[in-house]
Structures are given as C-alpha cells and as structure tokens.
Length: 122
Image 1 (cartoon, rainbow, N blue to C red):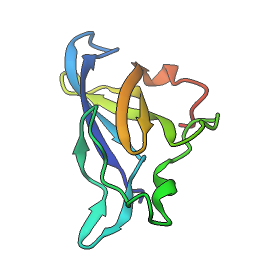
Image 2 (cartoon, helix red, strand yellow; image 1 turned 180 degrees about the vertical axis):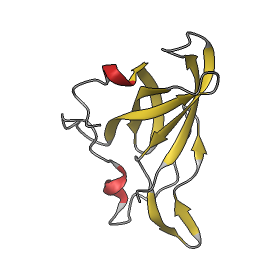
Image 3 (cartoon, one colour; image 1 turned 90 degrees about the horizontal axis):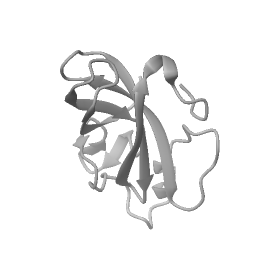
C-alpha cells in the first residue's frame, strides 16, 4: 500500500464537461511516517495550501518530491500527474499539479485518463 494525500479542486471535467469538484490523489509529501502521532497522509488540501511535512532542517525534507515526472525539475519544485475523480459523473481523469517547497502552486492541466501525458509515469 502506498501513502497519498488528496487535493480538491473545482474544474471542468473532461468527461461530463461540467464544473465539478475533482478529488486528486497525490503522492507528493505523503508518507506513513510523520512527526509525533501525526502521519503525512490522508489529508485533504487545496491549491495554495502548504502540505504537512518534515521541517527543512530534517534529513528527510528533500524526500517530499516523488519523481512522477520523467524530467527532473530544478530546486524544490516538483510536478505530478495525479489520478482524479469527478464529483458529478464519478469518471476518472488526470490532473497535472505543480508544487514548490511542499506548497500546492497551480493546476497545469486536466484530461481523460486515456490521454495521460507521456512525460509522466502512470
């Protein structure tokens, strides 16, 4: 089993073409480990949120990036193509999300699963 967090966005669903809440599974900044009794998984976030993770001084801080993109990004930036689900039609989709220093920066793209971008692992 793999740890993940959820990112909720409001966007145009590529299947039903309605503005919907789309829930995306992200592996960025997710782990069954944590600090104290708090684990770094199963948390719901939104664009602009800072994700819970180790402090910058912690030896595991840099492990927040998950490497879903086939092209390495410089600095503390990561981009992940996540599986999403539409709240209206319950159809799966992909959502490309940019992160920086454990913050959810922006949504860069949404599409149908069969059109998954080649620069990301599935």
